[in-house]
Amino acid sequence: MTIAITPQDVLVVVDVQYDFLPGGSLAVAGGDEIVPLINKLASKFSNVVLTQDWHPANHVSFASHHEGKKPFDILELDYGAQVLWPDHCVWQTKGAELSRDLNIPHAQLIIRKGYNRSIDSYSGFQEADRETLTGLAGYLNERDAGRLYVVGLATDFCVAWTALDGAAGGFDVTVIEDATRAIDADGSLEQAWTDMKAAGVARIQSRDILG
Ligand code: VGL
Ligand code: ZN
Image (spheres, rainbow, N blue to C red):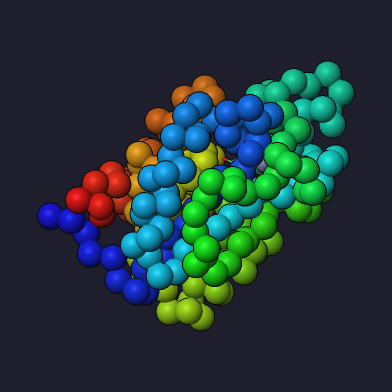
């Protein structure tokens, strides 16, 4: 049984940007493999939203900004624990660009996130302070969105946080697992699936939609 996608259903394509693809500064293993699959899935949706990680050069999530810290260290900030990353997705750099191999001309909205220097934002819905909203929920509600299908990079960070916030916002959320790839730092992938399951986020494979 394949899932029938309705015109109200929305595909959310998370952070398919050069810095998360092979050769990028925070490359996710196999990240390039999912691009053709995302294109195929996108052809089934009349509404596609893209997210774009978009940081100023001195962003708080960059290890380089904290003396004596290195990528993947964890730092306690006002809003909670912050994983430190290599510099990535700095606005107006090639690494921040969406992959040109995405073939989704009908995508209607690009949500940028992480542009406040002192707050990270894995989620497409809200920043890591859990207060500052991006406007995505408002957009989806105003457009009378149906189910949300989430794909992209990385499964255990921006995909998971977007899916979790979508579910918390009352949306019916599904992650298409084989159209994502993970960073998997220190058990983060397993934790993400546990959290998503507990939140009622469904987990499917692309064949469940494509047949
Ligand atoms: C992401 C780490 C830092 C992601 C973004 O897109 O999953 N991960 N910024
Ligand atoms: Zn980032």
